[in-house]
Length: 517
Picture 1 (cartoon, rainbow, N blue to C red):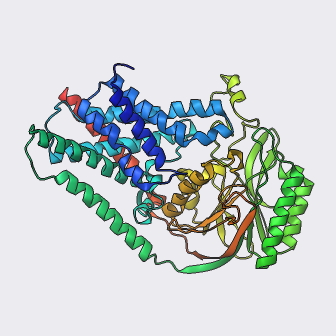
Picture 2: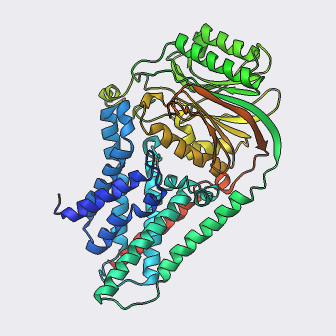
Picture 3: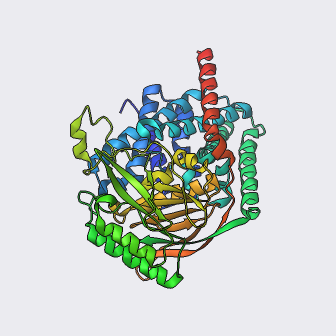
């Protein structure tokens, strides 16, 4: 392929597979640090031309996305294939930049030059991942930084610059090791003199400062509770067919059953949470669903938050509905603002109608326009509802966090994807929203990982069936949650500033490269 040696393809494939190891079901944080090394090393050693660089980066990306997002085949095999091949463009762009930033001199390497190259490489990776997350509304799952969720000390810097900041640190570390290894090779061959490795020292310094900040955030949280909220999140595990929604009778039966058990064990509850819409009809059109809501509230759920479709005229919304206060009080409604590409909307379907056949029916919902924050009638606790994948989309959660809620609540339904890694990946991505905003996150899923996550990203509790060794079983989590006064983190206020910095560095790097030509 374009004259690329087999070893180049092997390095690209190894990078793609190593990236996949960083995420569920494998979840190996070390893989995130090492994944870029094979392809990056090949790039600085062999200096492929632009066409070859793009092809190698694309091959690495395709290998990674086709494997880590294989769960999409549960819904649409054609959509999975097309989407993954498209997303592979972004690693391809990164590798072109990485090779070009290496310069023309294939032998000479200095500490200053290596630090500059690594900083540009890390910035280019952050920039291309950011583009993947916004173009065509974006599919930003599994950014490199997400692979570090289990390393709590490292993950804490997300409240400074979000997952992109974690990504930058991880990419900086991996690329530092790449150029250190290349420099060793040149020195051993005698083509370059042995000199102090200040570039390696810089990598160690960045990692050290990151860990120090993380230790301080974990060990000294300085949070003072202002509310105590009793809660229950119900996981009904209603079977789903991507091409046919579950019947409303089955949905109501399972939700009511789980709610009764939770109320029997816990007594009256301040906030009962049901998952995202499980049936293909709206709550306004289903008297049976409305009766179930009223019945559960009379039995002790002071406020009930549930997901449902909401049909208003010609538009259908995926909504979160909060029933709170006395009977007859109108519910509070939030309409999902970030629709899922190839799931809830089909891009370019107006031009190419045949694209609709690649996805399940109902793939043209209407997006809401604003972020919603609900207020519980009796306690005044403010909650920010998030629907489906919205708890994995940082910019959506950030907009909600700017309204200073006490709690993030995600209503989702991961049952479409069977026993794949999707639900675990969803949880991995969602954990960072809690760290970025320093808000607890309560997740109610139909068949996934119903869980409570602390503002430090710790999974405090989750539905788990020890007999079947599975989280994909009916159940619930309940308890009391101490809520602190919401504060604006640096990330909440300034967002992806690291992306802007990265964009500036890449731009300066390209100017410098142009001046050398």
